[in-house]
Amino acid sequence: IVRELPINRLPENTAGDIKLKAGAVKMLRYVAMAQNLSKEKLATFSGFSVNGGTFGQYLSQLRNAGLVVGTNEISITQEGQEIAGDVDVMPTDPQSLLNLWTPRFKAGIQKMLKVIFEAYPNSISKEDLGNETGFSHTGGTFGQYLSKLKKNNLVVIEGNEIKLSGEFYQ
Image 1: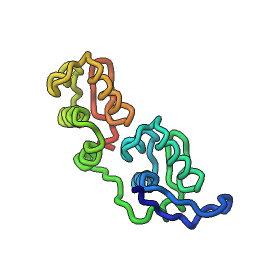
Image 2: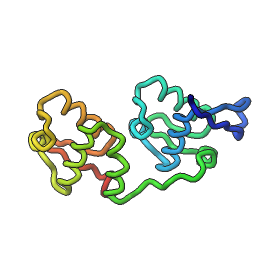
Image 3: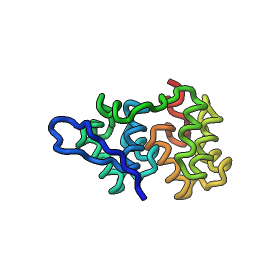
């Protein structure tokens, strides 16, 4: 069963009413919380694959309704903010950001992010990260997990060194 939220206040160039499914509402609320999110971050926060059909369909629906704008960086519109209602403000302190991000990932990615977080302000080598998390630093899973963190702009990779991105310490 999919819960739907009726949206009656649409831009003038949109005909009729639409209904947003629960996933689209979740996406709208995350954009409202952050005001501006990369497409990758929005997908991660809302639990969808950035290349998936459902994510694309919901994002298109939000854009067509005039609730969000943007292609790679998604921003909330005034109307989108009104429809989203009261949402939490995106945390700015490092520990709260870590707490916000970690449940969005598989256990292995969570473990990697926590180890990198604990190493801050220092970087950690790929080999040390692999040793501390139980993954081979040359393995495919390690690379995929690290890539997911990088795509969400949570880490910076310079050669063999990995460091927490400025996202946590702005």
